[in-house]
Every structure is written in structure tokens, then in C-alpha cells.
Length: 328
Image 1 (tube, rainbow, N blue to C red):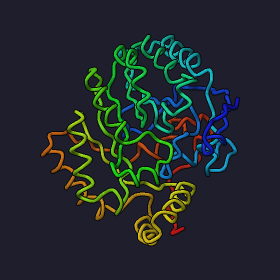
Image 2: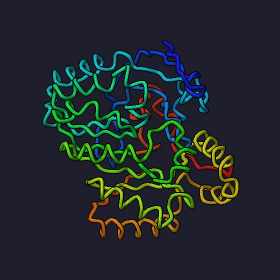
Image 3: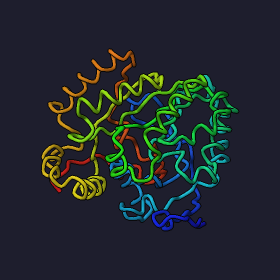
Image 4: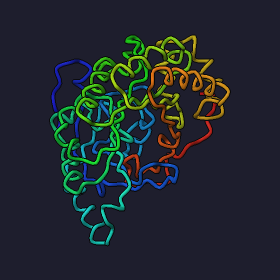
């Protein structure tokens, strides 16, 4: 399936239906607050340069480059497969009351642009609402407001709206096809007004770009004003070679003076050293306390350390695990 686009950037995007074996995928990491994940799409039109799921495209024989945002795979039978999986578990005497939350959007945004037409996320929500299975959703898109009718019917644990900066220049440089931070803040406000527990997933914070005290204060104040019920910060993680290479290309293009600094910060790990991270987090805690917004700790394993099934990769369970990184 191919859908023509009006803009030069989006005209390259191809959409391809794929046959998925499963939609409800187990999350085996014991530190995770959920046992299952759902990703109706493979690839993401948002094209964020820091996206930790970019390397998962290699499991489909695709390069971990701009194909991630330009070749989108749709799990076109997702709602029907999900229903069949749930019914099978219920026949095995698993009660709905025993289900831990299902996380939607652990790898690619469930409300990326094609969802407005494909409606795969909405179809999955209809099934989950029918069985009253508790869920959490992570997205950067106001399109989630379309599904308010279903969100009100579901046992909603939380909606996590990703906003890492209010700096429009940096937003456009690193998140080229995402809705604006201002639109996302309005989404936080609207969802909370409708009784949907919603907060801000402030990820990823970029060292020396979006982690300054003034930038964080602005973001926290905006979160408070929007009625965010929580604020969950996380610094940039570069846990596979493919992700690291792609991010460094964007960094070199926009901030070449920072490439060596980042190379040193991420020389031996996909995560920042605690000596850099912890002081910023302490400042954030003080800001959130002042603005009366709850801080939620982010468990780093929610990103690349999830099993590949959690990322929507039904095969290759042992591929793509975290690795020690070299400079480049």
C-alpha cells in the first residue's frame, strides 16, 4: 500500500501491510510495571533522531536509517489478532482481574500520522475496552484526543505525553515530523480535564542542549500549568550502534561543537554517567516540588533493554540487546 503525500519530505513514505503473529507481546523484564506491550506499527513517521527503536527495522531486512520513518509497516489485522490472543488466555483460566497493565507505544508512536487513516490503535483500544484490560499509552501526538470516548471506557493507568523541550529550534532539529510541544501541552490539559490521568514523559533530555536550568524550569512550569499529574524525566540513551550513528549525524549537522563532548559522555555506555545525570535530577526534583508536580522515576530498561517482543519484534528475541559502545 502506498499513500501519496503533498509535501516533498513525506512523498517518500511507503506503507506496507504485514502479517503479525502476535499483537500482545510479553515483557519479561521484572523491573517493568507492565507485562505486555502493543505496537500496531513498525517504523515511525515522526523520525526522531534519538529514537531507540530505530535499529529494530533491521529485523525486517531494512537499514536503520531514514527507512525507519519512510517505510512504515502496518499490522493490518492487529485488532483481530489481539482479540484472539485475549480469548486464548481467558480459555486458559487467566482472569482479567489478574492482568497487569498493557503498555501501548513502547517502540513506535501508536498515534503517528498514518493512524488517522489506518485506525489500528483505535481498533486495539476497542478490543481492550471490551475486555476491560488496564493500559498505559505513550505518544507525542494530539491525535490521541480522537479516542477520548474509548479512553473513558478503559481502566486507564496513565497517558504519557512525550515532551522533552519547549525550545522550538531544537524540537525541529531533532524531531522533524512530530506535533509541536505547544500542541502536546494542550493535549495534556485536555486529557486531564476529561478525567484521563496524564503526565509528561520528559525524554530524552539532551545534555548541554535541553538540560539547562532555565529550560527545565520552563518545561516544569508548563507541565504544572497544563495540569500534568506527573513528570517522568529521562536522559538520552544510545544503546545500539545504529541509534548512536544516526543521532551523531544529526548532532554533527546542527551542533558540531558538541560531537566530541557527546562521544566522551557515551564512550563506554549507552547511558550517561551518574556523575552527570544525578545533579540535574536533583534540580528537577526541587523544581517539581516547588510547582507541586509529582516526579516519577523512569526505569531505564523501558527503552532498549526490553525484550524484542516488547518492541514489537515477534521474532529475533535475542537480537539487539544493549551493547558497550565505542566512540563512533
